[in-house]
Image (cartoon, rainbow, N blue to C red; front, side, top):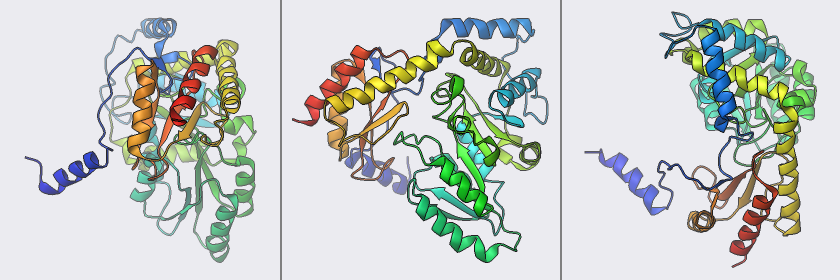
Length: 385
């Protein structure tokens, strides 16, 4: 029997209509998944992955151990070199997931007496990693450059001569809002105050930049960033993540990051699928990334045509969020869209703050302009009832 304290928490979730349940596969028109380019559904990419394993003679189901023991198979070096070249980074280090990468980096890089300044909307994996470190952490108002500088002035100048390091953490595209910070100004501030800038690019890869290389490269900020975290489970349609950094940080992570050291490595199939996804970004850019960008433009135009701008958070990414206050109301509209054939997820409190519940629309390269128009016309009808 569940302890009373735990049962009480579950009961409260149900009373607030915030109870989480595992979803079921469906055949609805997809405006919910992170598969922005349709890579996860591609039989062609699936077959190419199999061909790589066959050519490498990797008829192997698992990695057999951590990368520091027996699991560092040959595909790791191939894929990490491919990733670092693609992203114009000195090195890349693969992790098992985006959550794992953020936990692994932020739990061990900031040290005692260091300062971490992070956006209040940073992903749970970033905040969990920071909480596991021994550094002092302060959150700043979402995308507020002035607030960041005020925190830097407070913490950087008095400690300029000390051994204290300052880390500034943000995302290039925020998963629950779809918006982006002013990365150029942020990079300039970090240079001015000698702070280390770390950017999570999970929802920018495959969406922004040449061949989908991400926001940092689109803005030519590679040399201004201390580290980038990229993930493969969104636009690349597979699994895993990587840290992009210089060699010394890579060596440090290998030696001190517990989530990296004490976990079984990704199997060969996962690495082969990552390689194929990057090959596809390079070879089929017009067919994939450009089509996605076109659909994002259509989505934004339809929001404007239907006069829904006041409900949507401004975004030029693949994520567009329509704020509808209250768990009950947003779930009702999500279900209504589902009955009309569209999969649009309701994001409830406490995942987002109370009063800021929302419908989260994810735009894909495979959505048709007609589907985009239909789902937004339905939304306009439901929100005006």
